[in-house]
Image (cartoon, rainbow over the protein chains, first blue to last red):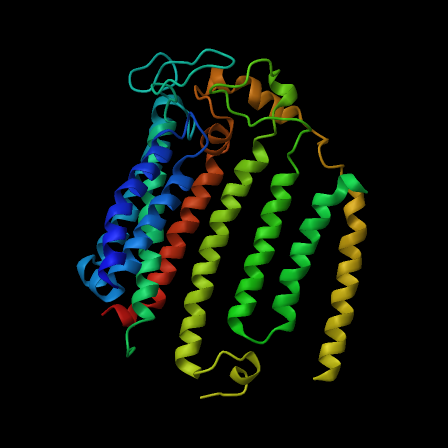
Length: 154
Length: 119
Length: 90
């Protein structure tokens, strides 16, 4: 694409990334969470793909690396579920929600201001699902864009 | 009659999508029709959980003076709609990949011509 | 071709009439029927789960098994797309 489109995409991409990561990280306080924030970051990555052209980006970012990244997100999600079975005797049990260590404080009942330290095991699950959705949507868009612009198949 | 108006909108969306699937010959128009049917079904799921004069079920800086289980919207249909939207995205990705393969092999996207060319 | 289009129009209009007359058997918009489960979830979210968000606690804590199935569907969609375009990538 032309130089104007590439410069605008270069300027807009960090703001989209920060906003998407904010929506993922504050999923237990405001509306949002893993799936919604992952869709925001994946659409920012699709903006970069349109601006720089798909053959160059396909040779720069190999798709097997992105597929491995997505599997890491899924493995993290399953590991947190099994840790709930080990520490709490229930599958998907919330074992951090008492007066524990990492995300352990309980909010006051009724209308409160937002406290980031609450939530139990939910922010960790939000991060795992967010990574999975970012990598999954980006690899689908990248492979389909490369396949529709290459001249010969098999 | 006036309190059933959102459900009439849902039925209109499903019928428009069904018309595009049954009566059109281009494959891309059929895929768009399936996507419209999925949007209509997601709208129906969310509208089942509305309470009159309710706010979102979130406790961070709630407006003061709202009694909580009496004036909040039901949260369970919204969670089921999230899952349904992700399933729609997955099915749409696989459908479009298969349409690209059909176009490369047959050279056309007309459904009645693809049935007759057997190579 | 003519018989196929006439049959299609007939079945489509029959389905439209069925859909239209089954709307009035639902509950009116704004008064849901059974609310006991959602009232329990709203009043006990901050004690049992520890979050302020009702929808996220339903997605990840009270009904986490459905989210596991949804993660499996996303993984299988990515695997299917990479499998269909296997010849193009090498």
